[in-house]
Image 1 (cartoon, helix red, strand yellow):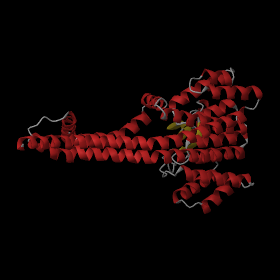
Image 2 (cartoon, helix red, strand yellow):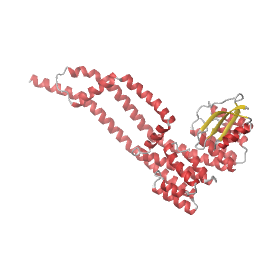
Image 3 (cartoon, one colour):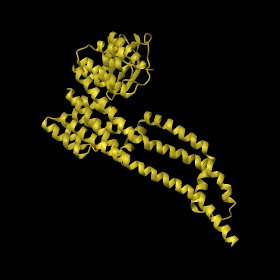
Image 4 (spheres, one colour):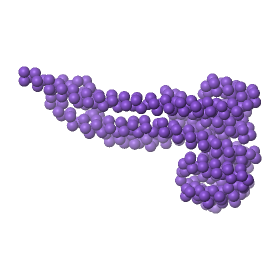
Length: 405
């Protein structure tokens, strides 16, 4: 018996690592297959050259260009090894060049493309390798690479326009928060002794500002620390605590306006990905399993899992989609028409195109509305603070004027 270290991908796209004692590598592969795990790699524990993925992260845009070139060369008739060697020579990113070299070595050692790429999950996400493995198993690797290329192009385009729309409001909000903190913590307290010596009744706005300023001045280090910790710890907790992640993903879909936008983005991604997978010849149940791992929302993944189980039990796609509370009536209707007419991939593609147009319109409207809204908020905050500072001084001026007369 020997000890083997393995990496495998589950049906939901999660990466599993561990040790197993077995007579041979074949026994390990068979045991993992019984657990419905897709093997990424299996090595003797003492012979493993690298057991953890230490690859630096690569931007999604770079991965998009990488997969696009791989798809073009493979479609032109080159072998996978020839494609990768060409990419290794031409890729400009040093980290991606090193990873490509490792992928080539792994394939030459007998691993498939999906297994070799899955050794670098920080760069090639489990979702990517699951899609490629589907193509390898079905013999449609070329079609699946095209699907993945189109998906990444759509993802880069969608994320780019969303970030562009939210970048300015985010910067404005951060600057407003920092300015408010500095004023109430360090500037306004310098006026408090003056107000206490005026011997006049202070207005409500000034009294509120004094209380707020006292709180921020007293607990400023705690506030700064809590803010920094929450920006670091909270994302980690959301990522690693399933109930918290589920609650957060559910909350994001129900935030006014932004929740509707997030819902449309996820539905568009689902429809486009599902359509592309079906066009590539992937069975519906396998396509649903892969698609749900691309949605980045565990609440929606749970909904898609219910649809997947319904399809596996032979109930059909339409009843499960109609019963799901996530999808809009228009989407349900188009899926029903597509399945009945045998044109489901085409109808799903139209759903994605229709939602993309709505997303563009919503993003434009948000950009137009958010700017004046934030300017109004800034005006109210600044006006309130000026009122709190100037009103006592005006009261003092009037009091002195009456004494002089």
